[in-house]
Length: 435
Image (cartoon, rainbow, N blue to C red; front, side):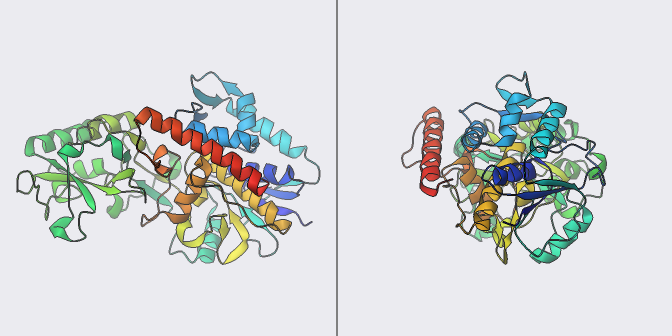
């Protein structure tokens, strides 16, 4: 059996390698450190945690906890070591990042029949099975190669993301559905703002605390994706002529055009999530919650993704990837981790786990497997494989990504039912597919 090439020694790459090895397969893990460091990495160890040391909540009351439970049932190395190296953090799983990386490096380094090669890969292998798991800071040379291979006009090196809220947290009595000039039906949910509310909102934006750009993010901001607070800072009326312009919209309650309008756009096929159109931002998360809840209809908004403007690299997965994480026009090549369009440590780990499983299965002539969309891992795969949003945007796990329940239930019961369904369907899938 030829070894599978795993390119990238982050969380996804390490998890993919582990899943291959535990099934009796061999791998060559390529990691460019310490030969070459990105501008964000500092340690030569594998599985380096660049940002926070928190892997988010373990509570089964939320999607993050459900995802961890699924990873645990699939024998995730990353999750197992995280629990071994944890530090106190309430209901969240946080780790001693140095011990965590050391432990991962030791475990993979001791496996029989495998090799860890410290070398930057600048071209995409053409022979054998390979998994690309190079993350959001993929080297310039490999990024160019991926761009050519996927026939992408670009990889999204500068990522501008608007916040997303849950449908059930929106006060629909303060909104109305319509598209500008009636074109496109009632595709948008509109939050009308009066003159006084608009200027209070602009003032709050201008005074809110912002996230400082990291060194590797210090580059110009495209005019087409300026942070909303950047637009507000150019003049008190600029938002009213930009993303909050009310032109072509009539509020049916007043039969008049509002002074300003915040538009919400459906984010997923189930209609459970809505995106704040044009609200990419560098405000701190707490400030986003405080300021954006000033918008009529969003006073009790539940944010499942915060807005951001940051350096990122990800492929247009819905166009070029199969749900098995194989490249459509080159099935021997898999992508894993954040480069597929997921966000978060555990989400990246989950994509590494699935790529590792399917890479190994392909190497022994078995068909790839795809978890049901009712599971957390399956919901992430469904997002990166079938997201209707253009351009495609990354997403972390949240309850809005799961298919709706057959019957409407209370919020508390809904969380329980989604969890029970996810874990039941995962167990049945494992048994059915022999995972």
